[in-house]
Length: 273
Ligand code: NAD
Image 1 (cartoon, rainbow, N blue to C red):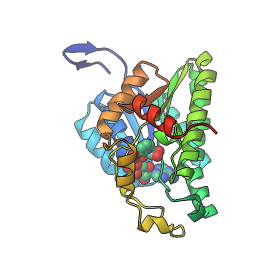
Image 2: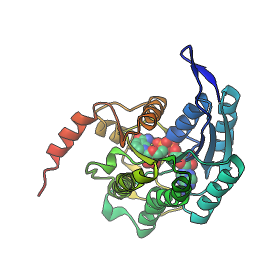
Image 3: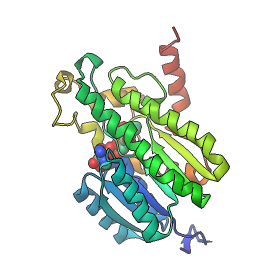
């Protein structure tokens, strides 16, 4: 869709994107940034009310459009169907953002197998489902970009967040391996590894349908993540702009500012052996 950006004509065509977890936080910010660029975005989330109100707000601002759809990323066939329906209705898929996720904290001895299953099913298997559905379409198109949201917890040891970190290391491994495999088909992959981002995630405890984790009552997650992030949380809209820049430049990894310093410090805190 032609448009004007910074006083210059931007002749690029509108892209079609799916963003899982698009009702809130990082997914919502990414959806909004894509719509601002004139793209068409499907916000897919278990929270259909949140996704619908986000889509309405984005579409009202334009110039692109957003629509909402209910999706649980744990359901692989539902993810396949969403991708197939999107391709049928819109003629292709340019960007698949596998972003839906939840945080389960707490020392490993406090976690039940139900906690492990939930965090793996949403944060890792959910991303696998998105890749499994979107990748063949993109290979066939000989173009497309998969963006997976991992975390800083996917690059460094995060005691107290071991189950979460397990899934995020998985997402980083999946993304960087797939990126190397996918290049031959013209398909790109980027993995997003922020430290703390100021979103509702930081105020949500573990899922309420699971057994209570004792440390949920004592640990202030927002405070802990802020501390782990060097005392400052990142803003979701700023992160979304960074991610879109990384997509434009085909970067493998999006990391937070001061990341190199953070990596250096944490690596020194966690020496091998
Ligand atoms: P958020 O809670 O604001 O948004 C997460 C969204 O995912 C919500 O809308 C939620 O309804 C949706 N969701 C949860 N389970 C789902 C499921 N099974 N199927 C579909 N949708 C589901 O959190 P956020 O901070 O925006 O998190 C987005 C991603 O960013 C997550 O993968 C998270 O792990 C990652 N991340 C967050 C931070 C942070 O500090 N906030 C840091 C690094 C990485």
